[in-house]
Amino acid sequence: MNESIAVYPGSFDPLTVGHDDLVQRSLRLVDHLIVAVAETATQGKAGLFSIEERVDLIREVYADEPRVEATSFSGLLVDFAQAREARLIVRGLRAVSDFEYEFQMALMNRSLWPEVEVLFMAPDSRHTFLSSSLVREVGRLGGDVTKFVNPLVKVRMDERFMCDSKE
Ligand code: PNS
Image 1 (cartoon, rainbow, N blue to C red):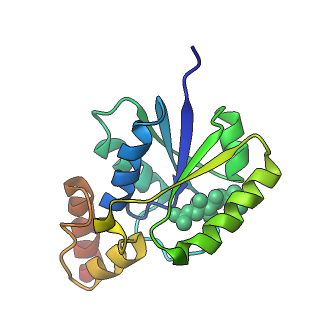
Image 2 (image 1 turned 90 degrees about the vertical axis):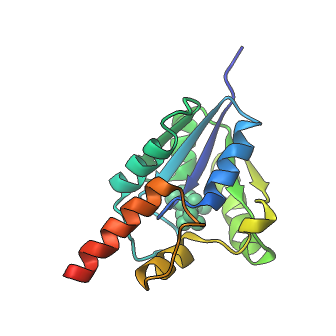
């Protein structure tokens, strides 16, 4: 039987508990999930971690979950998905405000590769306000991000901000 494979693309700068919620939900639906860090994000954002650091962190977080693979990709998401034979792309929809951007991307992706399906999933309601950009900002300004990220991510963020404050 063919393995079902999905791609969960994003910037993941950093991976949050909201992303993890979506990973766990996806694992109920597919055999193999590729968490794919985009080298070219549609909305340009000032980065906290390099692409390699983000991928390494995701690998560390899911070290005990062989069904999750972390990698990066350059170029178009649909080209990456096609190369990996993943006909399903998963994305989280936190609020109506996400919808327009997500819907537009989904239709563009499907127009580029008609065989792909995009599955939107609602995260746990506790995470609907959460975004990597807010977590970055809170962390950068000295706020406690413990509730929002995996402990491994928290350690890396603390190290990063410690280094930044010494510069
Ligand atoms: O976490 P993000 O930043 O909202 O993720 C956006 C992402 C990475 C899914 C999007 O920017 C993307 O797919 N980038 C890859 C380049 C691409 O395929 N662009 C066309 C999108 S229709």
